[in-house]
Length: 415
Image 1: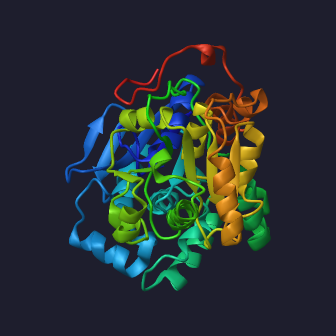
Image 2: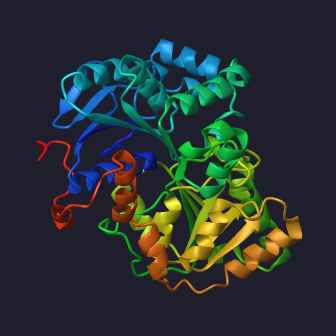
């Protein structure tokens, strides 16, 4: 069976959103599926590299055209990649017409990948389409944009009605959909974000230094900012319970203007280090040599539905994780199941309670801890790919050759 994966990001893109579709492609190919990928790229001319096609897109790495800027102005986050989606849909319909039986697997964000799949579905009504959501769709409705109140829910219902199966990345997100759309209840399934056991990431020895490092990796933006952490840190330092020389807050991957607090506040603390976007190997090196790791869940937008994909990299390192999230969130559930030391500061915690949690967290040992065997099994990419294979083809059975060690290579001809 042919599987066409529509994804905006794909390696070597540095965005964390490239990892899930890459794991799907890698392990589905080992299970015998013929994989093709359409992703975004920086060039106006289409670029084909083996089984990977890149069409001109708009992202942090690619300069925006005037039309793309206008789409984002009008539709907010729903406008991100809309121009690309038209190109991707047209390109896919040409390849599908000559490729026999094909299943479409679109994975967002951005939602433009599902719009591309809608274009294909209109051309081939009988084609099977699975829509995968790495983030809850409803989290996009609070974003700025002139037509968001009308366009967002309309697009949501259009996608859910046209697709054959919908994958949510948390059980809470799937349950929310079932409540809102009971007519589509049978379509909703859950496939959590996970990790690739072949990805060589683990804790490294800590450098000899006079301070401990609490590090965050990834983009910061509205709703995901370190303001509460820095405020607690300031109060602990001011009260004398914590010395600024003994702690370093390292924020990797976001410029200062996205932090949501004044530069004067950062400079006053004297222990905040801001590192620009770095290549993934360097980010993993910094991650592996951090004493503690920081997660900032979206505040006030998703009601705990969201699970940052980086949590699975953190858990493989095994050092204590501090999460700012809401009570009983999907993120808290993942941390509790992992067996790795962690602490959760809830969005509703009063300042004294938040300060105390931070103080006690910073007293934890930095020794790495292994994830529980059951967690490693449930969230590993090969197991998740086998579940996905059953949804792609209900008659699927894992073949013997799935035990080989061939890696997915978009430049290599299909087997």
